[in-house]
Amino acid sequence: MPETRELDLFASMLERRGATVLRCPLVAIRDAPDPVPVVAWLRRFVAGGCDDLVLLTGEGLRRLVACLERHEPVLKERFLVELARVRKITRGPKPARALRELGMKPDIAAGSPTTEGVIAALRPLELAGRRVGLQLYGTEPNVPLVHFLESAGASVLPVAPYIYADAAEEQAVHGLIDRMAAGEVDAIAFTSTPQVERLFAVAAAERVRTALEGTLVAAVGPVVADTLTRHGVNVSLMPTDSFFLKPLTNALEEALTRA
Image (tube, rainbow, N blue to C red):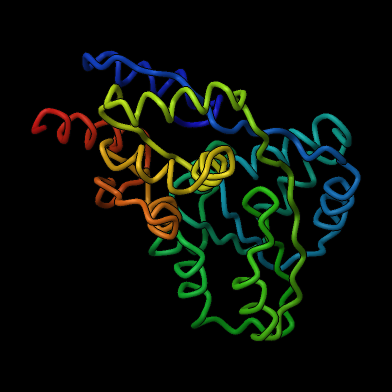
């Protein structure tokens, strides 16, 4: 199941369609435990320190604004002015939605919501000498994207405004694995890569893979699907072109109706 912030929404969509939902949030999103580096990055951004801003997640942009509101509220207006000025590159629909909430839109949208998609969108551009702000996905340093940008002559200014933390207790996660192994769970949905990593961190990989073999495994998009595949898990379904909870719910309903 998704992290805490999405769980109620996703569960209600499934329950309205007649599903019984077993809630086990594997991870939760928290503000960066030390706000000092985030505030320092925001001050630099507000002072005109970036030419481009790569937004990997909608959560990241919202957390940046929230950090300003808590620690440097007088800078919020200047932040929005700078955000409007810089060239904004988004990975997928969620950061684009977060921009729309602020009355803005991406200047460049990756064709595929992956690191490779962002690189492909940036490759035709002249990046030499550009100062590129990079809002990270959790604390994942995204070495491939940073390497691409630096190889193209850009200066990369990363910021990590949030972290992923364990949500459900290990005992609850073991219970979920046992119920899947017993055939009591028809489907499991993953909406972020940290959820997959948490499942495999709690129990032995072979035990997790065996439990998932008899369960329909759904991924919200290609990044999550690739992570599952890397762990040796067969992904049963994924929305075809729009990687949100509603298309995932539709795909689950269709698959379970056929089952």
